[in-house]
Length: 542
Image 1: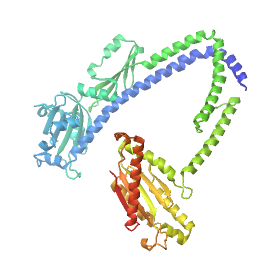
Image 2: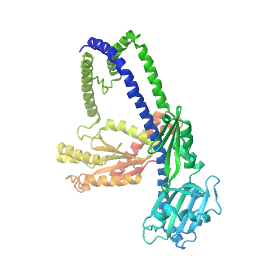
Image 3: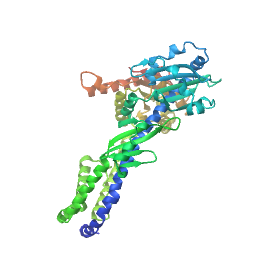
Image 4: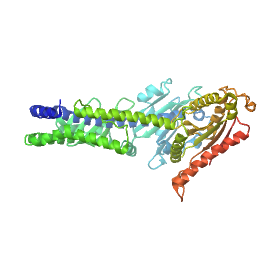
């Protein structure tokens, strides 16, 4: 179908279908979609708040577990470590762990030791711990945990006369888990306004806690009609004009509602949906007076814009020579045929360009990278390690007595030996950023990011043995035991960033630092040769 025929067909059909489908589309598809988007958004916000509480309980339980599985704590509960409190528990302990309560209970559920700390004033609450025994001697926490020695830990929200607390408890054992437990360790974090402020900062929402008795259910019923209130299985939504209040219950250890997580946010999605639909309806009413504008718009969309896209694509290919870009026109008309033809030719050029690049950057004999690739890639790794302040290792290898090998066995055998050594180097460079390269002749280099002195030394020793394990005979090298070996020079250090060097040409100074690093590896290689070969020398460059 030609472009002209498509334009005539679209104009004829659009006026017939537009009136019948537009209203149905707006009110039965688009508006519910906006409503669903908003529902997904506020459910996600509620889940974020709930997950924050669960994450807090998880971290509190882990901290409690670390203390409870500790020989010192075990001895303290057995009365065998009088210095435990003075050494381990002070205001810093509460502040660092962000907790208000530390309790040790004996196996008779009495308070062996208890301390309460005010995180805001950063002082101990005197006379509180001794009155808190009743907190732990009733309810689900008492029945399912304290009276059940088979259960080692428990956490959740504990409702007390003092307020709500995040509580994590664990039976005290020795570090190795042996022996009987002499009691229980309990950590508590008070849920107060200060804690709510901290949570509000974490979730980045207008967030608050509403206690069950404070939930304004009666006001909701008295002042709002049913269209503004939604009682779901997991939350309550109350809409005030373009503001939404969400209440989701959070349960304590007794299975009762401890409080409601309250999130307030603007109902922007539905508001924008209504505005969009209003504008669309007005536009529809005016559409009968805009036939010429619609015709021009369709011409622009079907003919002019695709032609412009093809033209811009061709001009970009000419200017940027980025032959990986594609038009991807999914059409069967003349523009589709033209676009597919252009994509075919650019794909061919891109494929051939990659082949040429590979040929330019790969060593033709061994298949690993060549000196040209090394110069470019090493500069990138150098700059990356400068920014990250990470250790970088450069290995420089030379095949021992290789000229003798070629003279003794011939160049074909020499090429085979170099290929096998290259395969060994590839086995040492598997991670991102690691690569081997043929530096020239019988010399190789290997770049290992993130490797320190100790690791580089172990790798160099392993590499020496790996080449020797190839078991390639060298009949004219009695010095190396009649086998092909390599000498290795290693430079290890944290590259210095050029922008941290004051004065001078930054680019030139950066190149000098890299050359100094490469020279250090090369110098270490020659020292390895002087030591008798088949060994390595490591230079820690500072």
